Length: 224
Image 1 (cartoon, rainbow, N blue to C red):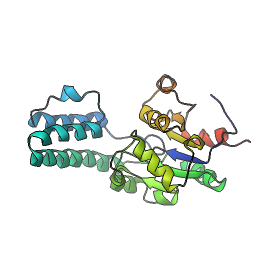
Image 2 (image 1 turned 180 degrees about the vertical axis):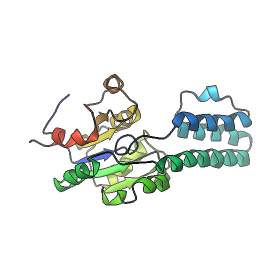
Image 3 (image 1 turned 60 degrees about the vertical axis):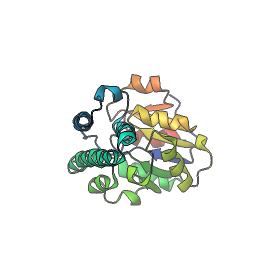
């Protein structure tokens, strides 16, 4: 992996597993949503290839085609369940060691910092109530129609940071969707091994950098 002297105007960070400990039980969350799907006559296996939020959106579309009010009811019930899991996990959330210092260093050295997440704003603020003081732009899923890896999430973040060239922006995350999202809009990408993804996962996804943890990032950006 290339190290040192990266032409980086801004860094956009994922949140869970990247800046804070990953403790959301996504398997349990998914099972709960799948139970709701079965109640509406939808076979959960048909959506195995989708992430949870996208599964909810697609199921809502299918249910709404038959009955719009049922579609709305499903959407709100499923999203409430997701939010419940997020809030419960946030009570035990903890920022990773060295992250505050790392974010501060980037900003002092003139690098713009954005934080984006598929998590809800309320859960993030439970764990990290001062998150907006640690970055230039913070956009949780509540503030965007289509969350990452959809390009809209990243594009809005760059726009609010006044970053015109995606090639000078680095997307950092613990999941391959962070790499996929960044590459879709032409960003450089970095995977961190503090979530569930492995070195091999990030290599296969085409990450430009792979780091043991996010605090190693400054040495890859600045010439020391």
